[in-house]
Image 1 (tube, helix red, strand yellow):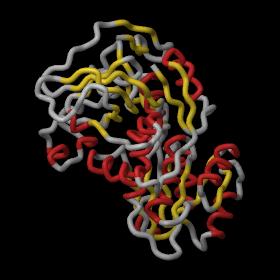
Image 2: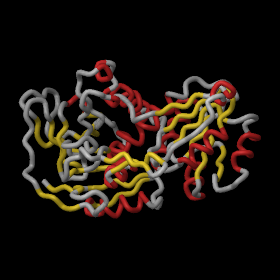
Image 3: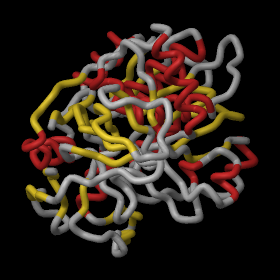
Image 4: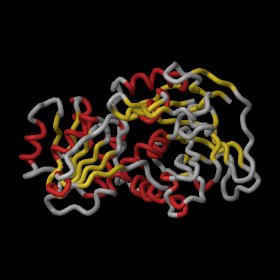
Amino acid sequence: MQSQAITEFGKPLQLVETPTPTPTGTEVLLKVRNAGVCHSDVHIHDGYFDMGGGNKLPLANMTLPHTLGHEIEGEVVAVGPDVKDVKVGQRFAAFPWIGCGKCPSCLRGEENLCVGGPRQLGCSSGVAGGYATHCMVPHPKYLIDYGKTDPALGAAYMCSGLTGYAAMKKVGKLGPDDQVLVVGCGGVGMMGVQFAKALFGKGPLAADIDEGRLDAAKKAGASATYNTKDPNAAKQLMADTKGGAYAVVDFVGSEKSFAFASQCVRRGGKVIIVGLFGGSMSMPLPMFPFRTISIGGSMTGSLGETKEMMELVKAGKVDPIPFSKRPLSAASQTLDDLREGKITGRVVLTP
């Protein structure tokens, strides 16, 4: 088994060879065919999250070497003795947001919010992900049928798709003139555009600093686009929407993107922060009741939401986002490209 692993935070990934694991109990071993590269991988590779004001949240408890990759699709090559109804040779995507199964969040069906000891593929310490030739999934219930969807997109839906879907569900019901604004049209933001169309029956507004991404969002169905480098962009959006967007979903999560979101949300609306770029925010407390806005977060989605999302995908109600493929050996370069904002859509590694 070969992996591209973090051996030192912030340094290029290294090729690591280990014995191919043998599944026991309910475990299923996948031969990885596709592994999406997510911006969360960049933060884990850096070894910290930016908290703003020069403060960092270090990943001090992450055991190295660590294999990244939580957008995984592959072929079943071995199963444990307790596995039923899964056969060698079948292809699945893997739900990576696995919890302890015992804490209050897990018992609510929200393993992605586990507080008792998450076992997230490629994200939790000691749990290897998909930047490898093989990946172990602890139970067949985490294997997701992606139908006739391109297998590379089947992998990408396990994070970027699920994150976009779950965030759009938090928007709730729209009135006839309500608008949703997507801030950040990278891989996850493009999924947000698609699921907004599927859930609300119309394309959202879209904002980004890059004209190429805005063009891609427009082609994907965004009803209007705004370049946030334009100092008049927020003013124009407020005028176009007669007071602002009912919901702003921030797929960047930076100080600048939140500032734009807070300018563009209308009175009584909501801002949903998804991205993890980093920074901090400040707002006078009286502005919350004066503007009657709510600010919340959204982190991936549950196993149940994954199945709901894939039904939409398999029914053809979600257009594919742009993606490209690279060999597993290009993992480090891909992380650098993503860090520098050079990627539109998704890059999928092919071990």
